Length: 291
Ligand code: SF4
Image (cartoon, rainbow, N blue to C red; front, side):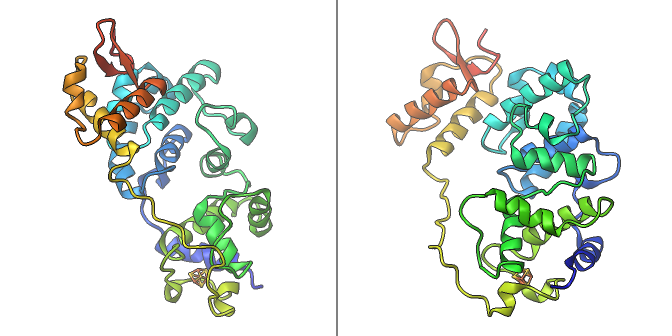
């Protein structure tokens, strides 16, 4: 196989998206914030929220000093709001235990709240330019196609994925750019449903040379959002975010009238997750605003 490094890196230099967290001067903390936000939310929705966020809370200590409710409000409609709570906890740990500096090694990063295997490596690589394999869904798909000649990666990641990417990594100075380029290719060209092979910078791809054999696994169902508990949780949080004072149960109930059992379940889960709390007189508020 030809060396894909120069092809990919040259393409990235030419065609990369201008994303604010990739610009010069962005700190490791601000990169960490972007990684938290990007875990389950598309770039276009993250960008405006991230820009406001890092201006308002540029450091871990500034973030830690904010109230839990302000953090949830600023998270807005990014979804999966437990991430906001974890980010707040992560900021507190870094401010208190690491002198306001994001740790640089994967082992220590993995001990931080909300930081999993992918995020730890992404921070080590993109913030500290460490030569570590960074493997997200996009990277797994590209490597599966280019190296193994199959349409889709296995449903869950494995140690094999890390080894595959490690084997492709160039020398240290170029490794971070290569890693981000691989991810960018998966996000913009080698996409899951409609890869744009005509625009691909790679001269060799095992899946293409085999004539694009169909996926062996059944097509994954697209997750619907409408009508899910996740949507109900979002509606309830929207109501609380828009009000500075605690709300009565009746005021909250109007957020979701079509299925009361589902609404109760969603509210319970928000209480269990610590995103919502109850006041002594039984009203509801965002975390930290229940008095
Ligand atoms: S040739 Fe097509 S399938 Fe192969 S890496 Fe490029 S975009 Fe993906």
